[in-house]
Amino acid sequence: MIVWDAVHVGRMCADVREVRARVRNALMGCGDGFDLDDVELMVSEIATNAVRHSASGMPDGGVWVRVLVSAQRLRVEIGDDGRAVGCPTIPAQGAGWGESGRGLLVVDGLADRWETLVDGDGRHTVSFEVVR
Image (spheres, one colour):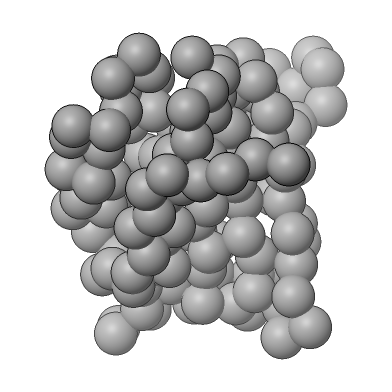
């Protein structure tokens, strides 16, 4: 069982730069030992997907963010406003260098673990974890 030491939860506007900055601020003082540049990159990729592919990108849209820190682990969860077409997935190997589709490849390469959950209302939450 993981005991989380610090928790930050909140709804944020759909501005990916603001989401990234607020996650970094939430980790100040408790994120030592984690590569915060990698964390910022993963947050950017996931938040961008939420804004592009769900109602989070609509007027008054936003994302839900939860940051959890334990002695050995950091977990970030980003939830969208729903109405996405499809589920976040890694593109098939050999899909080429299209304009989109590589964000989750970045997350897959940097995170120790990541997953996508869908609730009963069609809202997606993508989370990742990194270990110190």
